[in-house]
Image 1 (cartoon, rainbow, N blue to C red):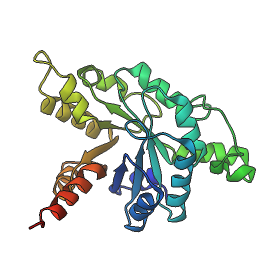
Image 2: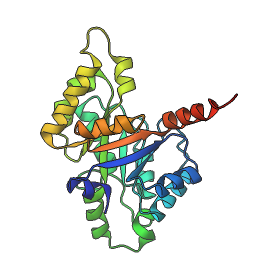
Image 3: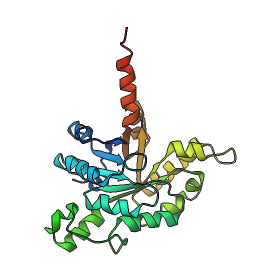
Image 4: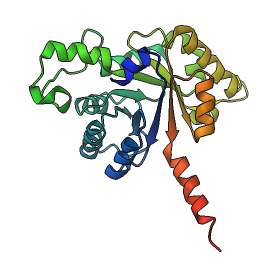
Length: 245
């Protein structure tokens, strides 16, 4: 069962964000039994051939993989989806127009204008019925926008009305960096966005640095939680180093 179907059934999902994906590391996350993997092509490499290989590895373990693209990168979104990504996470959604552009780049008509193809890996190299392929991806492709600025918080209500937008991930670091004394406190902005997601029944994706934060996010209403693997690995390496005499 895919990510979107599981969320619709009320499941809450735990995943891992990789900024420095390598084939073995991606496979280890799949073997470890996480519900999904999120590969970061915004702050990490976005080489398409390795990305396709990583998607093939997770598919072998039936672990859905999302891809975070950079700002306004419809071409990368299309290629990631053609290669088998289960959904797209897109940063810096500040306006309803940007949210509509995101959906437009991710979905086939009639919801969007993504180029239609069945000869990619996602279409089993042409061995699918085109209409069934189109309908399945409309139903299964997850679209998550990132609110990362006071402007995005202000426009959140309108952003969330975008047809085809499934949910929001708050970029807490960017939100804090871009907030000034004239803006609401970041903690208040985060709560406002979370409350609006809950009111609309949309997906809330949180990024956390460890199990305690993950439990707190789930208890607070998150639908999906993803570990910042860079942070957790560096903490682990520091702990290993502490044994030095």
